[in-house]
Image (cartoon, rainbow, N blue to C red; front, side):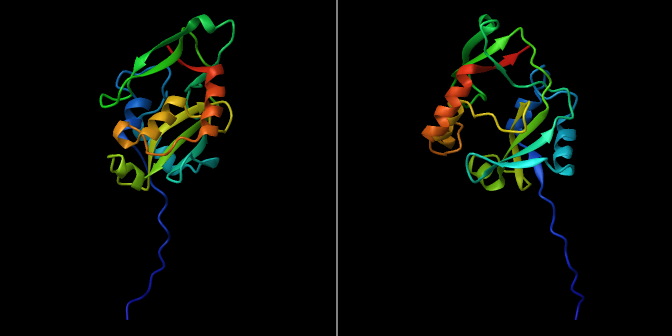
Length: 196
């Protein structure tokens, strides 16, 4: 009779999705994306270092891993004040060629402070397959928030709407949560992303 060998459970595996790789590590580096780290090194770090904490996502297939920022990446959102309001810009943009453009706004000519935390947004393998991004891992990175606090900042209202429209329109298919939407609007009325 063969010996029975106890197997240690394999650790959770994480990969960067092509969607996140293009947004977090663009071919032409920008000051408002992840700094001082290659995509492969970022992915390796997420697999090697346990997060400070794990937050529930907006749906069962989503979770957020909070890591102390080991890079010089700057915060993604800046508070709107009377002193900086004149630097706000807006335009219609799509995140990918397949998506319809939506109205977005951002600051120009402002540098945000270096973030204290990277809050990595993960989707499970089943959801990513449903969205047409099959991965060979347990979880795939779909985004990252650069924050001063070890917490999630609200998802942008347009992202919530896109999710509610379904996979065909670049969303996840999760219905709109009206209270979460109102909290998102309250935050994003007072904050904006920035661009170098």
